[in-house]
Length: 133
Image (tube, rainbow, N blue to C red; front, side, top):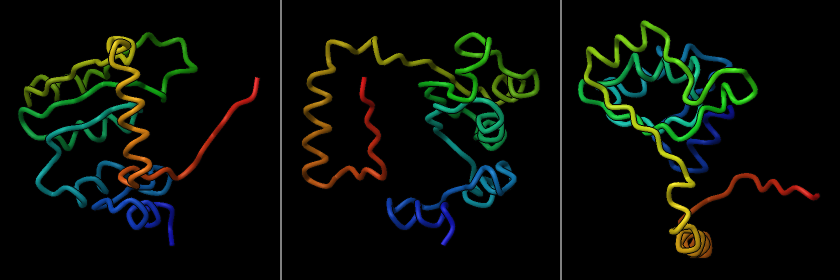
């Protein structure tokens, strides 16, 4: 079973793409033949460009990170390639940035809710990473 197949099986997704083994835009077009309406973007870079190519008119992007550029000198959010910016403009795609610190007053309630969902098995965790100082 491939990593993508494991993700689909474990989490009940409709599909998954291995960005290292597949042409992302083509694979996404196969998985979402009617296009993409909403994209939660925490990656950026070429993956986001491929998703945007497959977005529908009036689509929405929730920009919540850009891990592809975190260890670079690019600003956040990074500049959008001209071709991608043109697609966003022509398809009237909304792209809005969200910062977790904007919701710091709701952090305790969010952690409590997430903990509750974990206890009820409504959220699945595939890996736990902890750091020791």
